[in-house]
Length: 293
Image (cartoon, rainbow, N blue to C red):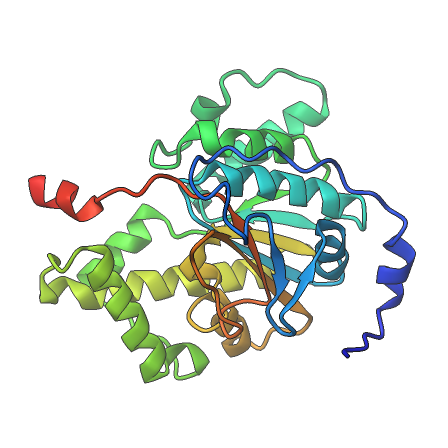
């Protein structure tokens, strides 16, 4: 039997009730035994949504890993942001989907909305990238813009990415640069490109991945606390992503990683602190699409 000595914040917030959970949207895995399960990967125990929120509310840094094309992940992120706000004051929200070039437009939109002024077409106003479908990200961004805490970018600029391709930088030695980390990320890059990526391009793509992770960690450190980062699953992973860079940058405070995963996937304890299983999107043969292109 595992006994927890809950922080005072957990005890004081236990009476708070989070908003209703969203309805599932993805079609696959609706009858899976793990559907909706929230697991504390440190103990193997299943948690209620309310218990998860109370744990995350104690963290200085919350990192949420998503599958970009799963609408249930986006709905749960909005729910989580709202639920956390009922437990403690949110300091900031960081998005992988925003770059520093967009920050002035984001700040102007937040100021206008707080004054009750119209901002027009948000995707146009924010120069939102079509690579991140607004139908999926729009509800979260629209909600965040109207909140008292800042919405902030956590990605590299296009110019920075271009510079990395021209001259691959080297990170200082640390947890994030261990050989097993680089090997695992390199293998994931090759696999995600269906083995069709020229070997000559792999070092630059690995560098971009790790420089993105380093940027996310740096932005987490600089952001008002408590802060929440939403990013792709590999960026959020404890064993490969931004949490390693937090360690290398000497971060103080409590970081918690929540992985949103589709039923049938498996998330290990070294990858995250918690996992929340959702329905799945229909399988797509991305490799076949790449071969056709």
